[in-house]
Each structure stands twice: as structure tokens, then as C-alpha cells.
Image (cartoon, rainbow, N blue to C red):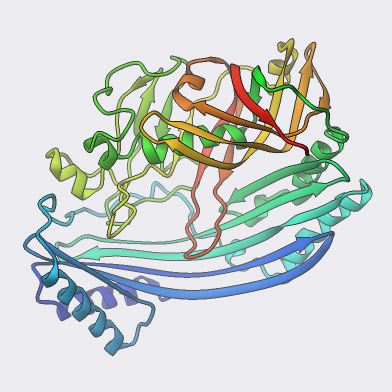
Length: 454
């Protein structure tokens, strides 16, 4: 981590090196570490730190972008020079008007940098895994998964006066408990490592594995289905990328094109992109340095807004909503802090009111097969259960499905009162925590198209 003062010095240095009309600088420093375990045994500890400086320049409407992971003076100068050469070789981008001129945002007193998360050591991760393995062994199960923590330092600035800086931390844990013919899963993500309940997570995953032991075959068909938050979040994630994306909306590729102001899903559903929600991963600005704000996407089933970065906003003479993913922005802007408003019932009550149905823990290997219509496919995984006469009676073998997200959300029966943060797996690359705050949902006639052998 280099600190705000050094980040500002680097930004000013980069801007001075360029003869472009406009210059943008994005600095991302991160450090992260991971402890991975399998078969009740820690088998991997890794840690990494890296820095990147991305420079975007504009000569009129000609844009060029180049990056380096070195802070050496010569490398930075070379990067600026490459960005300028690339810009001169480009055709004019008719959609480009200007980089954003943004005032500093308000952190809303959110604590993004948590020292005990940054300092969560290999020993601390090993102690967390020890708790998880202890639960597995007491239940005659094998455990698999990882515990990771990281710190990200992000600075985005430009020659128009935009300057945004923040440091944030996060911890992520996922657990699979495995029996001879069944598995269970749980996960968590948090800014504060002290808030993680590793034993509770392990017990949750273990219970799913035990209850779903000796799964039975279930004939493909349409079933009343309850989706726990892990599964429910995937409906919203695909909508975030393909429906609320301002670039796709303008190009006519979004389901919401020409539908804003219209009722599209059940009126009990309200979706808000809320970067300041305390349950989620709060963050004050986007990757163009534009302050984020709370934005209603769907209100009582009616489509209200899509999201914009500076490029898409200028096309409609709007202001950016603070949803840029950064240069080059080929994919378009995406809401990363979706919150679904809760309902009134507990999941247990939703189960008791189901005569015959399926309870799904999560999905596996989901893919969109029609982005415009929001049709997607995938499988259930790590805990799929049969509900009979208001009770979970047994585990069922995993099921494949193909469904239309909009149609599913129009067959809504209930929404749970409790929300959970479903964190996105940090995966590989730079550390930046995102997640969806979502309740469980119950729908009718969910279409399972085929069954598996496991």
C-alpha cells in the first residue's frame, strides 16, 4: 500500500507526462492470501501482492489505453507513451465526449479498511480451518474449501480534477462437506474478519450433507421450488450484467430496452443498487472515480432504471450513475451492489406451506443462453432436497434446468424475511469484493429438464 499522498503524487506525475487532451490514471494495489484445504487437510498456502497503473488518454475522440505493474519512473513514462501511440492509431470513437469531472464522494462513515482483516495471518486462517475440519470429523465427513483475505488500495483520477481514493479489506470462506454420496455447501464474505463464524458455517454445510445422504431420483418436471439465497442470487447476477447494463440497453440487447416504466416481474420484488448498504460490500466510487449513489432498478415489479458509465451516459445526455468497470469498458456498466428487499416469512414457514416441492441450496455451472430474453441453464449442487407435506424428507439427485429468469420471477409465491450477503468468490486477479444481498425466494412450476446420476 502506498497511501493517499503517494497515490496523488503518482497521478500528477503521469498526467504531466502526457500531451493528450485528457488523461485518466487508475492505480490498483492489492495483497491477498489464501489457505486451501481438502480431505480434512490443509494442502496449500499462497500469498501475493501486485500493483497496476492503467493510463487512458484522449486526443479528441481518439482513445488509447496501456497498463504496467511497475512504479518505476521509466516504466510509467513508457506506459504513457504506449497509450498515446495506441490513441493515434485508433479511429475516432463517436460515442466519446469526455472523461468524467467528478466531485469527491461521501464515504457515509462506512469502515472499509479493517485492520484485523488485513492482519488475518496464515496462522489465523489455519485456526479457522481447524474449526471447520473439527466439525467435519465429528460428523464423519470430509471437508474442502478455502479461507482467504485481502486488502485493495484503489485510486482513480483524471486531468479534469477527478480524484477518488480508498482502501478496503475483505475475507471470504467457502466450505464443502462431503459424505459418501452427498455434499453440503456454505460460504461467507465480510469486511471484518472478526464477524466470520467458521464453526457455524461448517455446521451448516455438514447438516446439508447429512440430510441429503442417499439421495433419490426425482423425475424431471415442473415443481414448486424454494431457492436459498445462494441460488436466488444468480437470478439477480445475470440481470445485473445483461438487463441493467446501460450499454446493452442502448444497443437493444437488454431485456429492458423500451420497457423502462413497465411492470416486468412480480410486484413484490424491489431491487436496489445500494453501495452503502451495511450488509453488503460498501464502496464509494466506480472505476472512473465517479461517486456511487443508491439507485432503484426495479420498484414493486416495475423497471425504473439501468446503470451508466460516462460513455453511455453521454449518449443520452445523462450523468454517469457511477457504474463503470473501468477502461476500456467494452462490456458496459454493471451494478455490483444489488439488494433485494425482503418479504415476511421464514424459510421454515415457506417449507411448511409447500405440499410437494424442491429446496435448492445453490446452482452450479450456470450460463446464459439467450442474454436478451434472460434464458439461462445450469444444475443444482451441494444440497437439493425433496419437500413433502411441509417437511424436508430426503435429498434428491442433482437436477438440470433451463429457465427464463423473467418468467420465473413472475411465478413468485413468497420471499423470505431474512436476507443474506452472497459474496462473489474473489477468484484470481486483483482483489475487489462484491456481492448480492438477497433473501430466499419461492416460485411455482420451476422447470427441471433432466436428472443426474449423483
